[in-house]
Length: 173
Image 1 (cartoon, one colour):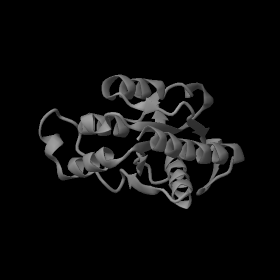
Image 2 (image 1 turned 180 degrees about the horizontal axis):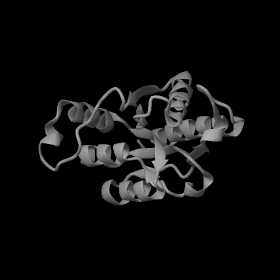
Image 3 (image 1 turned 45 degrees about the horizontal axis):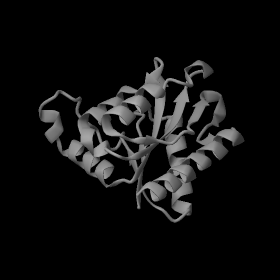
Image 4 (image 1 turned 90 degrees about the vertical axis):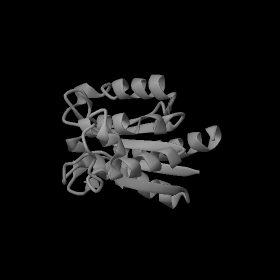
């Protein structure tokens, strides 16, 4: 079973990246085959409906997604939605998402956007028949201190999300 953790923030001081790293560490310590793909390290072209699909980095991302049984998406929330980077990734890699188990770890500026990930979740369910892990992490900047997750409940939920993703992926493989 292959698992993929996606860090989709381009911010060098990203809190969602801290969630991605924590989930990756939890999965690794559990003995799972897991890859952490930080999209800061794999610049993607904007989806233009044409040549962007053939870009070398698009092909790399598509291959990692296609090979994964479960995908944990760590994303910032901007303007009540997942960031444009993850939406662009889905547009570029399309059918590679089919029948995947997907979980979400989100970071936002405030508490009001906690349901905002549902637009992306619904798209993945309807367009690509993904199974969405019904638990997700929603954190705000107050849950972090420097390079650490300071809120013990957020840390626990991140671990729980990672292990639940692995359990679902194994059961539905």
